[in-house]
Image 1 (cartoon, rainbow, N blue to C red):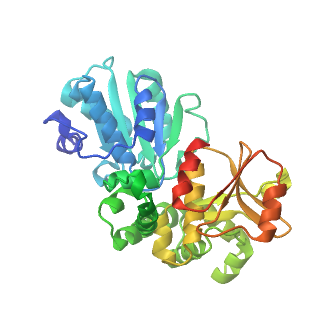
Image 2: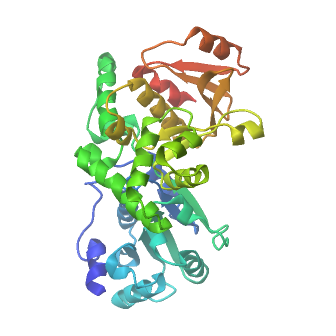
Length: 391
């Protein structure tokens, strides 16, 4: 155990720096603000989206601030050698190694915390009884649900998303001057192919993305929920990617896969809970929001490209607008009236139509112009993405 903990915490032996990490200020600034607060911070999101890297940037920040290196512990709880140990036992071994008294404040970083049985109760007891600040990650929203409300008032959750286009350019060290803005479209098409998962951006690899999808479906869906037919789940996900940006018919999916609509609905929830897809409801009265088909969007453009290739770049552009709007924690809907659709309507009353290098049809124009709201925009090119930063 001692050797393993030293492997996870190299700063105990040597100096430690975050210079090899590319910062994501949209998240790190929020995480730094949490350092002095008592609340447990959960980082959630798609596997390989960069949750661990963000925690290690915070560890480097603590060391810069003068926190003693022995008072910082990081472990990954999906490690086979730790599966038989609960958090208290790991913490006890750690305190013995460094001879830390209970009253000494420690900073605890737990990767994939949901691999621990009864972790909600364990974290509650740590929070209530010890001088401790906890950051933890999970790749499943369902596993984070605190059904017995152990952590009510004791925690907050931050979802980490794939890189935005601006972050992508930063990771690729791409700087475009205003006079060269026409190049943005070419780089955006590269972004479509590579997506926003940091490791794949740094070293694009189709096999990496395929293995990631298989890993999530196998570990977080089929194994966890006891589903025997792994290939059916993979086929289901392929169908979802082919339909991204469109209204989803559960009955059609069920017929294609030869499963019941209830089973298709339950499986869809599993994909959503592991952040592989997002579902967009229709704007309207409560019953319309609940009963109307939802539109489906891919979690990452590179993953969508893996399944659907380079056809219809307009659907990728629309998917990107959705991800951007969602990143700002808005409630978003689509508009559908008399067979005509407008892509997005936000909780602030902003109507947005995505038209990548194209124009509204006559019927869309009529609905767009007549819809009762003060702020409307058509975004039809990469250069106009900056408009989104203003809303």
